[in-house]
Length: 262
Image (cartoon, rainbow, N blue to C red; front, side):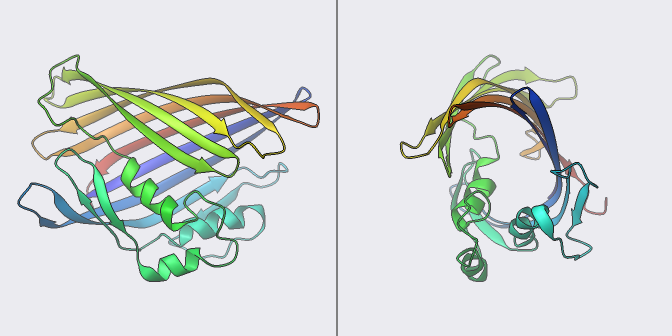
């Protein structure tokens, strides 16, 4: 199976009434190979990121920064750290077990990748770590409850992400809304995010607003998500040395099943 994933991240920072906006867009081509189906209905799968394309607005308003893993060009400057952490993931075999409900377990990444994450500058967290890769590959899907669903049924999923300054907690409430005219199953999602800052950080951070809405279209015949979309808005206020900074982060993610040749 081949998927196309697009993500945009728009960050607007307001310091003393002066706004600065940065945009990062990411376009990924992903493939999944079913290696084996076990007697309990779970599957051993091999996932791979085949290609990554990144674009980012320049922090100082200069020319837009671009990267394409297919071109194998070196990137320098402010964009280099992001590119380095993402480029290491391309064409790496990441194996895991997927339950009949869609939950991932036994996630394994190549040993040489683990060693590269242990090198200098690898302690930034996120995808720039072995644990970050495991979370990224195992948390980005719908996990269905272990029971038949009727229109209107809801269920919840809780996720946590460790950040350099604290812990981000996400609560996702799924709602099965029934079949579409084309026979697909629609699942709506509402997300709420909160931040628990570490006690020893030299600043205060508060989430003033968090709202997200998503849609998943599931094909029961193939047993796959055909397409999905999620938009999340977070507004935060950061206070340090008597100065307050307001920050807005808007994330837009879409994913769809595609033919390999396309």
